[in-house]
Length: 126
Image (cartoon, helix red, strand yellow):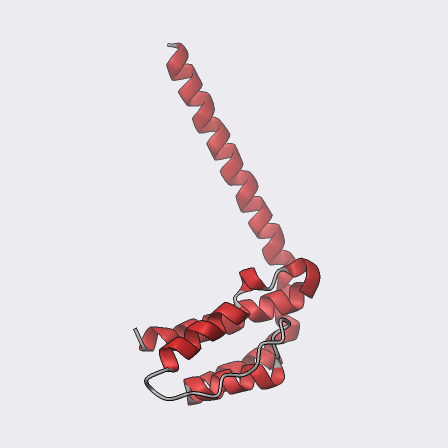
């Protein structure tokens, strides 16, 4: 009986934590909506470059949104190295490598959207 009670409490605690986490996600989404709205012109240009080719996307990103870590634009875009080049660029722009605190929410969200575009291109090379 005591074990059943403890299990029920653990399940209740887990559900409560899930609700807290979900509310935090909703608050974050609400805070990022205006920022994403302001980034739309840049995101449109990134999507346009992505439609051209992986090389065009990478060159556009490095030219107009240079990484904060000083990384230089790759120069080898041959078919044999494109998968590796995309993966390296994904690592540079991944949102986990570009946290909100030192770089700001706008840069963090831009990196998230850039990573999405890069991942789509990377999937073609798998």
